[in-house]
Structure formats: C-alpha cells, structure tokens
Length: 490
Image (cartoon, rainbow, N blue to C red; front, side, top):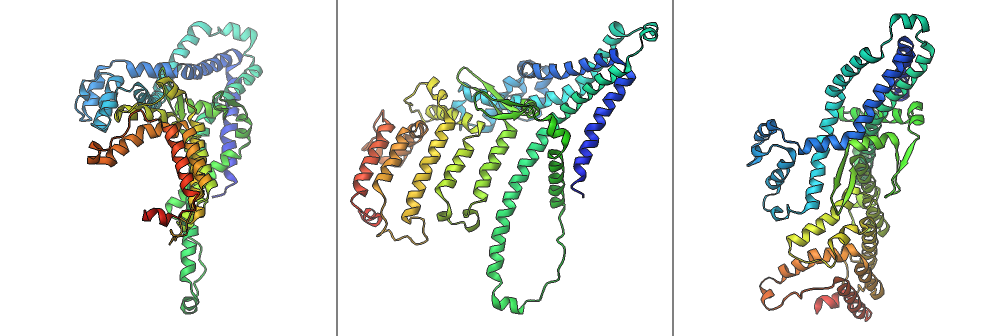
C-alpha cells in the first residue's frame, strides 16, 4: 500500500466536505444557508455545553426499566436499584466483597468510582446524541424553518437567493463539519500514534534480545556446517499488515495539510500548564473521567494517560536492562526519568491521596495531617521526589556491587553520608512519611506476631523524625567502614 496515498485520501475527504458545503450553500442561497449553519453550530454547542449536566441527570434519574436490565446481571440486590447512582455501591460491593467493604463510605473514593461510571454513560449518551437525538433535532429545525423562516416564491423572485454569499456561508458550514470530524478523528489518531510508539519500543527490545540469542548460536563450527539460506522476502502476518495499515493511516493524517492548519489552535491548562490542541480538548471532554467532591476535583483524559504510559514504557524498553535482564544495567537516571514520567499521570496523582485516605481507615491508623491538607499536597512533585530518592538509593547499592552476580559481602561497604542523605530526603517527603504511617505500622505489628504481646509498636510515631534518626544511626555505623559481611555476622 502506497504510504503517500493516505494524505491524498484525507485531502479528498476534507476538501470534499468543503466542496459539498459550498455546493449546498450555492443551491440553498444565503438565507437558508445561514439558518442551516446556525442550526448545525447550535447542535454542537448544546452538546458540549450540556454534556456534564445531561449525563449527571441520567446518572441520578430513576428509571423503572433499569431494574429489569440490572436483574439480568445476576448480582444480589442490584435488581432493586432504579438508577445508576443507586447501583454503584451494590456493584462495588459485589466486585470487592469484604476487601474494602468498610471503606465504601469514603466519599472521595465513591466520587472517583462515580466518575468512572459517568465516563461510560457519557460515551453512551454521545452515541445516542449524534444518532437518535440528531435526527429529532433536524426534524424539529426543519419544521421551525418551514413555519418561521421560509420565504415566499414572490420574495425569492424579487430579491433572488443570493447564491454567491450563500456559497461563502456554505464554506463555513463545511469548515464546521471538517472540524467536528477532526475532534473524533484527531483523538483516534493520537491514541493510535501512542499505541504504535509502544509497539515499536516492544519490537525493538524483542529484536535486540533475539539477535543476541542468534549470535550466540552462530559459532564458527555451526556456520561451517550450515547451508547458505536463500534470500527470501519476509512474509507479513495479518497482525503485522494491520499494524502497518494503522501506521500509514496515522502518518497520513499527521502529514495532511488541512489537519496541520486546522489544529494549530491550542489551549493551556491553568493548573498543569499543559498545552492541548483545541480539537483534542473537545475529544477529551467526552473520553475522560471527571470527579468532584469538597476535597478533590479533576479530570483524567484517557488519551493523555495512554501517552504517559507509552513514554514511561519507552524508558524501560530503551534501557540496557530490557536486553540483558541484569539489574546492574539499570541506571539511576532511568529510574528518576521513569518517576518523572509517571508523575505526569493525572490518574495516579488522583488515586494516591484516595489510597492514603482509605488506607488509614482500613488499617485504623491516624495520619499526622488533616483531611483537607492531605488532598492539597502536590503529589506530582512528591512522586518526582520519590524518583530522586529511589535513584540515589539504587545508585548507592549498584555502585557498591550489591547487584553483581556473586557479590563479596566481606568487602562491600556503603557510604555513610549518602545513606544519611537518602533517609533525610525520605523524612522531607510528605508522600514517603504518609505512606509510612499507613503501611509501616501494620507491617511492624504483623512482623512482630506473637511477640507483639511483649514488644509493642509505640503509638503516635513521627516518621519524619524516625527517618532522620535512621539516617544518623546508619551514618555512624557505616562511617566505621564496616562491611555488609560484618553486619550479617552480628
């Protein structure tokens, strides 16, 4: 298939829509063209302006027929629900059982789960809006035009249809149709582009591993006895042909002159500073998880999350570790870059405080921050800090030789200043200390087991101070040049 043909195909599609708009504008004349343009524009404006309101109404509204649909799912108690909102807690309880049953009262968790449900309902509503509702809307607009705006034959014969101005308005109507197409098509192409990047990174890593395996097999003896293979063209599987077709379509879309010019307009998010093309912004309005409570609010665009996942995966796929599977080949900068990438995930940043909030209730521990302050923490920055700490810790043990195949513990020492610095950074990290409150105390109690009757975990532990104390103790010990072998023998 010719790669250069796809920009042509997209040109035929888009310029064809513009040409049809001008043709219909010429046939209809100015008055009718203006009416149809405004009706079409109003249709799109109504959809995006009322999307959230309409979906939330459908989410909370009671429909008797829904109970019959829910009854088909064979979930206990679900057939009694008459709205999607009533069904959510029942579905969550059936999915997770007693695991988080006590935590279902967490309003922020329920708000995010509701956002997932609203996302699914939003897609269904969009499909109905642009099919059934659009047909009804066009019928009503046609009736309104006939009653209020249709001109008499005498008026048309006296003043004319003004076809040339009508053609200009028809061009505007065509541009509107093209841009509406770019909203959906642009989002789909962006998703496919990120999927292709992920597949490329995976294939490159696999090809490198296979080539290393082949080289080990092609010894001098095997080469001297093996027949010379005939040169043949590789045969593509159906899956490879499908991927190649998607690649060509995506590249053809990105290289199209209409796409390049109509997608120049961008919006900047005030909170993240992230620039998004306007057509992708409208795409994200549909394909996103929106949530809001008194403590949190936000939106998770699935297109953006896929891009973050692809970028993070590429760091791993491009590393030497993906080829050798040797931990010592991982570098500290790769670990830090990985955390910096996943810190861009709106989904992860949203889930971290919810997990901490639910964790303190589940394990019956008390955090040292108020609930409002817990959700006000900049978790993107905190994830980046954790990445820097993990990078330093990994570099410390890797440089010391702990990741070698046969480490000599009797000669391995760790730097005291670096170790103390890592613990100090943990103490300065709000995410690390909050995670310690939620996870460390239950782990310590579980580790003590029966000994807990004699040795108890102190209450009201201040983990910021504990990390600092660990660092001081570790530095004092390691500064004596003690080896890990000596520590193990103690």
